[in-house]
Amino acid sequence: MFVSSLRWLLVLLPLLFALPALAQKPDTTLIRYSGQLSGQYTSGGVNRTLFATAHSVTLLRGLHFGAPVAGSFTFGKQERRLREREWLLNTTPYYWKGHFRFYGIGGYERSNLRGIDSRYQLGAGPGWAFYQDSLGREVAVSNLLLREATYFQDGSSRTVSRNSTRLKVAYSYRVFTLSATTFYQPNLQDFSDYRVSQLSTLALRFTPRFAVTGTYTYTFENRIPEGKSRDNTNVTIGVAYSTK
Image (cartoon, rainbow, N blue to C red):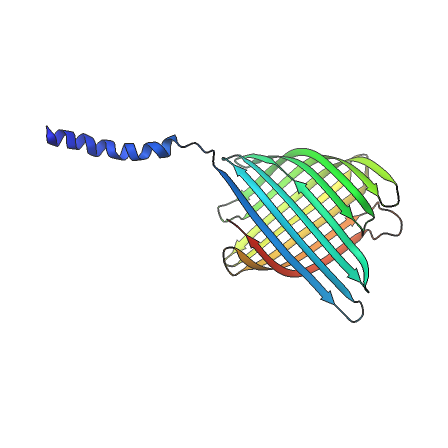
C-alpha cells in the first residue's frame, strides 16, 4: 500500500510543480529605458559646438503589445551664434504577432534650423519584420499613413497627408551593436514634396548597460521657409546607458 502510494506521489509531484507555470498567463509588464548623451566640438575654419541627448522608455505588456516613447534634444552653435535647437517627441504603440506589426504614431517637433515652430503628427499602419532574434538583431519595414500639421516661424502653416516608409536594421556582434533607421515621407498629394531622415548608431559596449557610441544623423526637407537650411548632417560621439 505504501509503495503504491509512493509511486503515485512521485508521478504527481512534477505535475504539481508544473501547474503554476502552466497556469501563469503572459500578462507581465516590462519597462525598458535607454539614454544617450553626445557632443561635438570643432575649431579652426568653423567654430562649432553641438550637444545632443536622446531618451526612450518602452512599456512591454504581455506577448503582443509595446508602447515606446522617445524624445531628443539638440543644441548647437556656430561662430558663437545659435544655429540648432531641435526638439523631437514621439510615441509608437504597436501590436505584434509573429512577423506582423501594426503601429500607431503620435509626434511633436520643433526645429530652429528648419524654421519649424511646432509640428504635430498622427498616423497608423502595418509593418513586417523580415528577421528578428533573441539577441536584438532585426530587419523590419513599416508603412504608415500620417496626418501632419506644421506651423513655421515666419507665421505660415500647412497641413498635409504623408506616407511614411521606415526601414529599421539592428545588428550585434560581441561587444558591438549597430542600429540604423531610415524614413522616406512624401506628401501624398505632391510627391516632389518629401522628407528624408536617417539615424545610425554604432555602440561599443563595456558592460550590459553602459556603452560608448558614435552617431550619424541626416535630415532633408525640401519645403521650408526661405533662408533656412533644407538639410543637416551631424556626427557625434557620446555615452549611452540602458536597462534590460
